[in-house]
Image 1 (tube, rainbow, N blue to C red):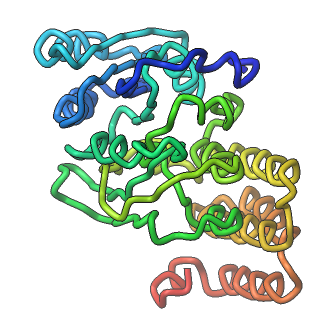
Image 2: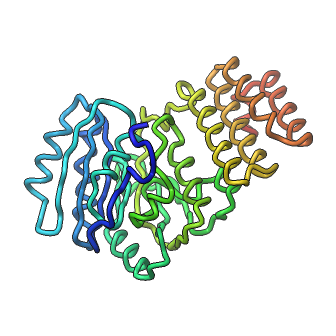
Image 3: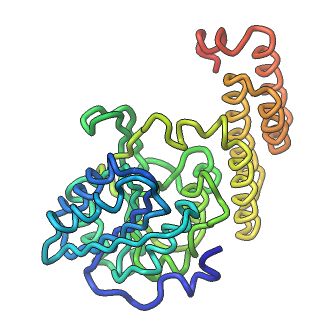
Length: 324
């Protein structure tokens, strides 16, 4: 881990009113400018933008330099840091450690903030007992006006088991007080995928008071070839590792009950079906057994019957009739 403890992570109280937007990036030069522009379009000031380049080999530095020259103003400060490739969690940790703001917003380098997000979050945090504020978001493909999915986080349960089924928070959804991050702890740098699910699970189990605003605050880009679109084929082992790490967190916090295990089992069984669709039956079998080990007897029987049908009828045929 780059950061040995939460206390080493975001030291000090931070500058009042300043929001530090931490943007990890790796070879995202074609879309990074759009992400930075969405930060510049925020109605709130002051803002500190920390772009942490995780060893990019493209024109990332030129994009950031042009943005800093053309868009920075008296209330918008830009800092660019380069590190040897270590993954997004390490880049987020470094950005947070370097930040100066009393408030911190994490933002992936291909996603967008909507104009009033930071202002609305800080208005809600005028109440000093509110440690973080989350917005809903939508997913888009290609251009921001091509929305493909709406995620209404404000309508979802904060129950840990429910969070495993469907994330209650997202990387870009929340703005955190600096002291909240020290309670939560740094991003887990050992995790290659589902890091936001694990980090946000710790948020939900921290005992911190949060608010979920029923308005959209950001847009998440669905990019062909991104880790989220190729995750099953090349990242299933990392998914299992993260699942086990989240179960360790739940055990430590006393919430690793049957409901939590069943939610995790269902998630892993779903991944096993996607692996089977990709023709990776050996990997699918590993994930299937891991999923079943966490489920009750009735659910195990149902999943075994479904897997048998996948073998006999075929995944494509089952998908055609809505059973995949």
